[in-house]
Image (tube, rainbow, N blue to C red; front, side, top):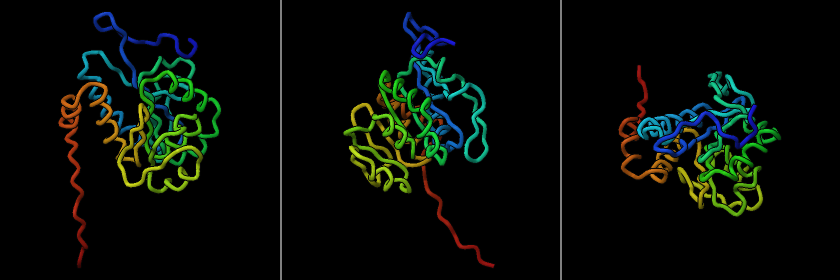
Length: 216
Protein backbone atom coordinates (compact mmCIF):
# COMPACT_ATOMS: atom_id res chain seq x y z
CA UNK A 1 0.00 0.00 0.00
CA UNK A 2 1.12 3.53 -0.72
CA UNK A 3 1.88 5.68 2.34
CA UNK A 4 -0.55 8.38 3.38
CA UNK A 5 -0.17 11.49 1.24
CA UNK A 6 1.14 9.67 -1.83
CA UNK A 7 -0.78 10.17 -5.08
CA UNK A 8 -3.99 8.17 -5.22
CA UNK A 9 -6.14 7.33 -8.25
CA UNK A 10 -6.59 10.96 -9.20
CA UNK A 11 -7.25 12.24 -12.68
CA UNK A 12 -6.01 15.40 -14.26
CA UNK A 13 -7.99 18.25 -15.77
CA UNK A 14 -6.09 20.72 -17.89
CA UNK A 15 -2.85 19.59 -16.30
CA UNK A 16 -4.07 19.97 -12.70
CA UNK A 17 -4.80 17.21 -10.22
CA UNK A 18 -8.36 16.41 -9.32
CA UNK A 19 -9.29 17.76 -5.88
CA UNK A 20 -10.68 15.31 -3.36
CA UNK A 21 -13.40 15.42 -0.72
CA UNK A 22 -13.00 12.57 1.74
CA UNK A 23 -15.74 11.25 4.05
CA UNK A 24 -14.42 9.21 6.97
CA UNK A 25 -16.51 6.16 7.87
CA UNK A 26 -16.42 3.95 10.94
CA UNK A 27 -18.74 1.26 12.39
CA UNK A 28 -22.12 2.54 13.60
CA UNK A 29 -21.87 5.94 11.93
CA UNK A 30 -25.15 7.78 11.34
CA UNK A 31 -26.22 7.19 7.73
CA UNK A 32 -27.52 10.61 6.74
CA UNK A 33 -24.54 12.32 8.41
CA UNK A 34 -22.44 10.82 5.61
CA UNK A 35 -24.93 10.16 2.80
CA UNK A 36 -26.52 13.64 2.87
CA UNK A 37 -23.20 15.42 2.26
CA UNK A 38 -22.17 12.65 -0.17
CA UNK A 39 -25.23 13.45 -2.29
CA UNK A 40 -24.32 17.13 -2.31
CA UNK A 41 -20.64 16.56 -3.05
CA UNK A 42 -21.40 13.84 -5.59
CA UNK A 43 -23.60 16.17 -7.62
CA UNK A 44 -21.02 18.92 -7.25
CA UNK A 45 -18.26 16.64 -8.53
CA UNK A 46 -20.37 15.53 -11.50
CA UNK A 47 -20.82 19.20 -12.44
CA UNK A 48 -17.13 19.98 -12.06
CA UNK A 49 -15.90 18.28 -15.25
CA UNK A 50 -13.39 16.23 -13.27
CA UNK A 51 -12.12 19.05 -11.08
CA UNK A 52 -13.51 17.37 -7.93
CA UNK A 53 -14.13 13.85 -6.70
CA UNK A 54 -15.65 12.48 -3.49
CA UNK A 55 -14.41 9.30 -1.81
CA UNK A 56 -15.24 7.29 1.29
CA UNK A 57 -12.37 6.34 3.61
CA UNK A 58 -12.25 3.89 6.53
CA UNK A 59 -9.73 1.92 8.52
CA UNK A 60 -10.02 -0.79 5.87
CA UNK A 61 -11.41 -0.48 2.36
CA UNK A 62 -14.72 -2.26 1.83
CA UNK A 63 -18.18 -2.25 3.45
CA UNK A 64 -18.70 -0.29 6.67
CA UNK A 65 -21.91 -0.91 8.61
CA UNK A 66 -23.90 2.08 9.77
CA UNK A 67 -25.85 2.10 13.03
CA UNK A 68 -29.07 1.09 11.27
CA UNK A 69 -27.41 -1.63 9.24
CA UNK A 70 -26.79 0.12 5.92
CA UNK A 71 -23.43 -0.93 4.49
CA UNK A 72 -21.47 1.76 2.69
CA UNK A 73 -18.34 0.87 0.76
CA UNK A 74 -15.12 2.66 1.69
CA UNK A 75 -13.06 3.34 -1.45
CA UNK A 76 -9.81 3.67 0.48
CA UNK A 77 -8.20 2.64 3.74
CA UNK A 78 -6.34 5.07 5.97
CA UNK A 79 -3.14 3.73 4.43
CA UNK A 80 -3.89 4.39 0.76
CA UNK A 81 -6.20 7.41 0.93
CA UNK A 82 -5.34 10.22 -1.49
CA UNK A 83 -4.47 13.68 -0.18
CA UNK A 84 -7.67 15.49 0.81
CA UNK A 85 -8.74 19.03 0.07
CA UNK A 86 -11.81 18.54 2.26
CA UNK A 87 -12.28 16.08 5.11
CA UNK A 88 -15.70 15.33 6.58
CA UNK A 89 -16.30 13.31 9.73
CA UNK A 90 -19.87 12.12 10.36
CA UNK A 91 -21.33 11.41 13.79
CA UNK A 92 -23.58 8.77 15.24
CA UNK A 93 -23.54 6.36 18.14
CA UNK A 94 -20.33 4.84 16.78
CA UNK A 95 -18.47 8.09 17.38
CA UNK A 96 -18.19 7.15 21.07
CA UNK A 97 -16.02 4.20 20.09
CA UNK A 98 -14.36 5.88 17.10
CA UNK A 99 -12.98 8.59 19.36
CA UNK A 100 -10.86 5.91 21.08
CA UNK A 101 -9.58 4.44 17.80
CA UNK A 102 -5.97 5.64 17.59
CA UNK A 103 -5.64 4.85 13.89
CA UNK A 104 -8.75 6.88 13.06
CA UNK A 105 -7.70 9.79 15.26
CA UNK A 106 -4.19 9.77 13.77
CA UNK A 107 -5.59 9.73 10.24
CA UNK A 108 -8.07 12.56 10.79
CA UNK A 109 -5.38 14.60 12.55
CA UNK A 110 -2.88 14.18 9.72
CA UNK A 111 -5.32 14.41 6.82
CA UNK A 112 -7.10 17.33 8.44
CA UNK A 113 -3.85 19.23 8.94
CA UNK A 114 -3.21 19.06 5.19
CA UNK A 115 -6.81 19.71 4.09
CA UNK A 116 -8.09 23.13 3.09
CA UNK A 117 -11.38 22.47 4.90
CA UNK A 118 -12.08 20.41 8.02
CA UNK A 119 -15.75 19.57 8.58
CA UNK A 120 -18.05 17.44 10.70
CA UNK A 121 -21.68 16.50 11.07
CA UNK A 122 -23.36 15.80 14.42
CA UNK A 123 -21.05 14.14 16.96
CA UNK A 124 -18.29 14.07 14.38
CA UNK A 125 -17.41 17.33 16.16
CA UNK A 126 -16.29 15.29 19.17
CA UNK A 127 -13.84 13.45 16.92
CA UNK A 128 -12.54 16.72 15.47
CA UNK A 129 -12.03 17.97 19.01
CA UNK A 130 -10.07 14.84 19.93
CA UNK A 131 -7.83 15.59 16.93
CA UNK A 132 -7.18 19.13 18.15
CA UNK A 133 -9.00 20.64 15.20
CA UNK A 134 -11.53 22.55 17.32
CA UNK A 135 -8.94 24.11 19.61
CA UNK A 136 -9.91 27.77 20.08
CA UNK A 137 -12.77 27.42 17.58
CA UNK A 138 -16.51 27.98 17.56
CA UNK A 139 -18.44 24.78 16.86
CA UNK A 140 -21.78 23.05 17.08
CA UNK A 141 -23.16 19.52 17.09
CA UNK A 142 -26.41 17.58 17.50
CA UNK A 143 -28.63 19.09 20.20
CA UNK A 144 -28.36 15.87 22.17
CA UNK A 145 -24.56 16.21 22.34
CA UNK A 146 -24.28 19.97 22.88
CA UNK A 147 -23.63 19.54 26.60
CA UNK A 148 -20.98 16.90 25.96
CA UNK A 149 -19.19 19.23 23.55
CA UNK A 150 -19.52 22.13 25.96
CA UNK A 151 -17.77 20.14 28.67
CA UNK A 152 -14.66 19.78 26.50
CA UNK A 153 -11.90 22.37 26.86
CA UNK A 154 -10.95 25.14 24.45
CA UNK A 155 -14.06 25.19 22.23
CA UNK A 156 -16.85 27.77 22.07
CA UNK A 157 -20.12 25.91 21.59
CA UNK A 158 -22.87 27.57 19.54
CA UNK A 159 -26.47 26.47 20.07
CA UNK A 160 -29.40 26.55 17.66
CA UNK A 161 -27.44 26.84 14.42
CA UNK A 162 -27.57 24.43 11.49
CA UNK A 163 -23.83 24.90 10.91
CA UNK A 164 -21.03 27.04 12.28
CA UNK A 165 -17.92 28.19 10.41
CA UNK A 166 -14.74 29.30 12.12
CA UNK A 167 -11.96 29.85 9.63
CA UNK A 168 -11.52 26.68 7.60
CA UNK A 169 -13.45 24.55 10.11
CA UNK A 170 -17.19 23.98 9.63
CA UNK A 171 -19.24 21.93 12.07
CA UNK A 172 -22.93 21.18 11.67
CA UNK A 173 -25.78 20.11 13.89
CA UNK A 174 -27.28 16.66 13.59
CA UNK A 175 -28.18 14.41 10.68
CA UNK A 176 -30.03 16.52 8.05
CA UNK A 177 -28.02 19.64 8.97
CA UNK A 178 -25.08 18.08 7.17
CA UNK A 179 -26.85 18.74 3.86
CA UNK A 180 -27.08 22.45 4.65
CA UNK A 181 -23.43 22.54 5.64
CA UNK A 182 -22.33 20.71 2.49
CA UNK A 183 -24.28 23.07 0.22
CA UNK A 184 -22.74 26.05 2.02
CA UNK A 185 -19.29 24.53 1.55
CA UNK A 186 -19.90 24.06 -2.18
CA UNK A 187 -20.62 27.79 -2.38
CA UNK A 188 -17.16 28.37 -0.90
CA UNK A 189 -15.37 25.74 -2.98
CA UNK A 190 -16.85 27.10 -6.21
CA UNK A 191 -19.53 29.80 -6.06
CA UNK A 192 -23.10 30.39 -4.84
CA UNK A 193 -24.53 29.70 -8.30
CA UNK A 194 -23.06 26.20 -8.33
CA UNK A 195 -24.40 25.51 -4.85
CA UNK A 196 -27.84 26.67 -5.99
CA UNK A 197 -27.62 24.35 -9.00
CA UNK A 198 -26.83 21.40 -6.74
CA UNK A 199 -29.69 22.38 -4.45
CA UNK A 200 -32.06 22.52 -7.42
CA UNK A 201 -30.94 19.13 -8.75
CA UNK A 202 -31.56 17.65 -5.30
CA UNK A 203 -34.92 19.44 -5.01
CA UNK A 204 -33.78 20.34 -1.53
CA UNK A 205 -36.23 22.98 -0.34
CA UNK A 206 -37.22 21.83 3.15
CA UNK A 207 -40.83 22.39 4.11
CA UNK A 208 -41.63 20.62 7.36
CA UNK A 209 -44.87 18.65 7.23
CA UNK A 210 -47.94 19.54 9.24
CA UNK A 211 -48.77 16.63 11.50
CA UNK A 212 -52.41 15.83 11.98
CA UNK A 213 -53.96 13.76 14.68
CA UNK A 214 -55.68 10.72 13.24
CA UNK A 215 -59.22 10.37 14.50
CA UNK A 216 -61.41 7.30 14.24
